[in-house]
Image 1 (cartoon, helix red, strand yellow):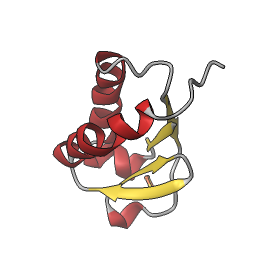
Image 2 (image 1 turned 180 degrees about the vertical axis):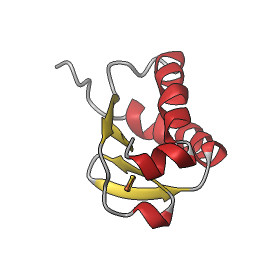
Image 3 (image 1 turned 90 degrees about the vertical axis):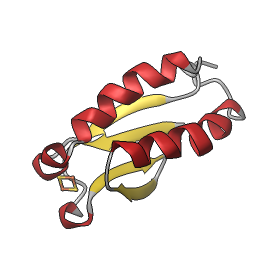
Length: 88
Ligand code: FES
C-alpha cells in the first residue's frame, strides 16, 4: 500500500505535516514498514477541499489529524496487513 500525503502549501498550512509526522511513527508502531510506503507529493490540485491524501491511487480529503488517525487505525491497518510485502 502506498500512502501519499500532499505537502503543497495549502495542505501544509492546514496541517499535512502533522499527517507525515503521525504516519512516520504509526507505520512502524503497527509493524507495517514492509507493507506501507509513505510518500509526499506536491499539490494535488484540490486545495480548497481540505487536506489531500492518496491511498494507492484513490484520492481522499481529510479535515484534521483525528480523521487521519481514525482512518489509519480503523481501516488502513487491517487493509495493509492483508497486502503482500512491498519488499518481495
Ligand atoms: S496543496 Fe494540497 S491539493 Fe493543493
